[in-house]
Amino acid sequence: MFKPYPASPTPTEIVSHFLSALACLSRAPLPYPPEILSPSPQAASGSFSLPEPSSTNPAAVGTGEGLLAYLYTGLCLRISHFVFLVWAAGGWGSRALSAIMTHSLPRAFPLPLSVEDAGHASARRSRQRSLAQLSSRSQLARHSVFGYAEPALGPHHRAMTKTEELNLYVEMTWLARWLDLPRKEAYCTRIVVKRVGVMIVEGREENRRLGGVVVPTRPSKTKESAAIEAASVGLGLGTAVAASQAVAFRRKESTDGNVAVMALFERACSVMGIGLLPSQAPADQAPSAPRFGWPELQVEMMKEGIAVAEALPDHRSIIRFCTSALRSLHMYLNGSSQAHLAKMFPRALSTIRRRGMEFSGVGWWLPRRIALSMEIGR
Figure 1 (cartoon, helix red, strand yellow):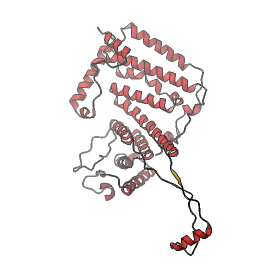
Figure 2 (cartoon, one colour):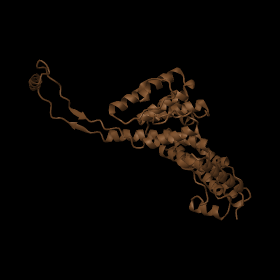
Figure 3 (spheres, rainbow, N blue to C red):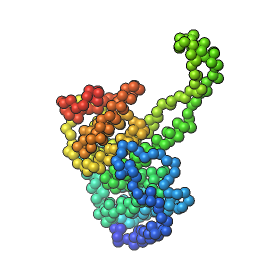
Figure 4 (cartoon, rainbow, N blue to C red):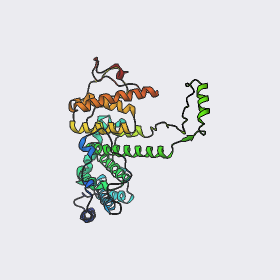
């Protein structure tokens, strides 16, 4: 026996107690520093770079902002998870209670579609029909369920540690995906890509500092012996050559995790209507899909993706994202941004060729016409 959520006193009372605790936390007399409540300079300027890595948080240590933000966001997620499980069970009843006690989804809940099934219209319609039935039986809208978690994304969450912020956005991404809210999922995925990119870059820099290999050489020779040796090998007229004291080896760039980060960004781009060029040059150019989306938001999203790809670095993604932006969003990019992109992907292409990396090229975006040069075509 299932009852709609508004007609069930038990879950309504539980949520009311949760909301009362949330209100108490929101009235805590702890002022947040102004740098937490203000936007980042990168967001205001729209630059093609990630913020500088830092080991400390904006909030002062020991003032309580981080703990308060952690409690507030954690309580928002608890409320949203509670209401979500009631909605996933189709209303309040034994199935919802079992899901809440075990913190697992009901067996009959339609899981998100895989990449293969997402391409079939029948599978998408079947899942949307099942989700609509759950909303009808529980009398809970999907947006209202997600609305309980949205206060956790306020500016106060920047007082938490970087790991806690990443966990918050990962939870929000999964919640939006379970609720089939693609725009919400794309926004959270966009932030996850930025956070993961910064953490990967910082981790690699730390490993490079701690794992740098320095091999000391033999003691330097005297001026007379160095002059004799230099003359004997034809290095000059007996002039002394300064010997280096140490030799540092440059380690190979790590690419672990690059593919997964770029796959997340590509998923967000597909939701936001950004047409990325295929990673392999097709034999026949397929007709372009109808354009949709907010151009200014798409430009900012591509700038962030290019910045993450450059920081990792992922040279193949740099070429793909730059050419995709020049193809689809050139009418919304100013002259300096277009010039920056036009100089960026040839540098990435030359790096790929110099290091002998595999690269299949990027397909033409103007069928049977020369777009830029033969360098990008093959």
